[in-house]
Length: 423
Image 1 (cartoon, helix red, strand yellow):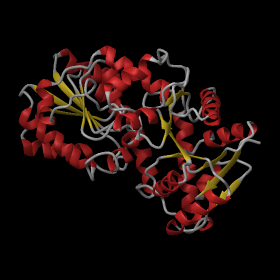
Image 2 (image 1 turned 120 degrees about the vertical axis):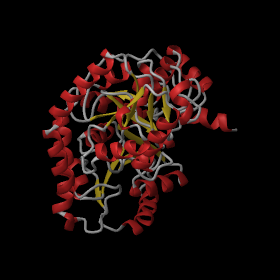
Image 3 (image 1 turned 90 degrees about the horizontal axis):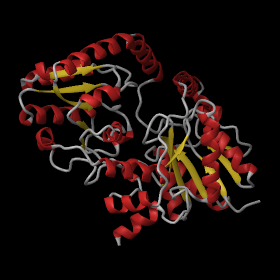
Image 4 (image 1 turned 180 degrees about the vertical axis):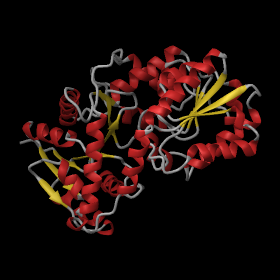
């Protein structure tokens, strides 16, 4: 039996954590899952399971005691900004317990993040391009061929099962409080269902309108909306609400873009549609005198949209990385792992409309290779064979303590380079 003890906290409504835990157990490591709600319990199948039914105020004390009594060496979780997880990470760091965070990959569609300490604004990935180039030089060339497909249907049913179970069986974990902002589940799923029924119309309009824009050689910029309650907005941006980012972009575009340019705003594909973004945007655009220069898309092929754009302005969406790959200038308004000199526009938003230029393909390729070698693994959360592929690699890296390290020879650690650069 090894001396490693992995504690799994909340993850996606997927068998991923359960399967990784099983493989770690088979490798001789101690594994424990802590369930905070009935939804967690539905997707965790580990032999060593603890159900925490206390309140959030008592959670830090409970967890500190649990870490100490059970000699925990590692915690694994999804979403470092969730209220329960923020406490778990703070207490873990005070005890030199390793923290591993996972989520959908910075690259899509078949990559998964496996990263030390946190993602996005909390990422330890270097923000200095010389460090990135050094990481890339020691990395294998990333194979970006699409290998695995995930199941949206399975993901959707898992999400529904998770949240409705928490709603209808709340009495099993009476003190549990959702650790992130979200609408009432019944309202949320009704709204999503309604939006999906109309998705075909949105895609058709976007396809036709984009063809018109390209046929007319339109000079347009893309601003992709993110989910308003996403931690990328809530925790890793200067905005309290998504509307604040929208107003900033509209006002800057109105004042500083050339008069024949257009702004294409695309709603997030998983937005529940509870806010009429189109109405809000066009109303504000009308007040600014630019309503006729705004295109609002609720659908469409993202790559085709980006390939015709003169630039992409985003808060911190992974759309920015895709835009870099497709040779489109990018500016971020929040904290993003890819926001650094030589990759993204570093001037003001007001200057972006007239001065942005694409990043060098060599620099973009270096960034992609460095990220793939250090922070990501191939696979998906919901469908085979991508699920098993991801589970196998994740278990190997966790077991060998190689999370965040180069996979070829382990000479450079992202956390180490960040520490060196700050000294």
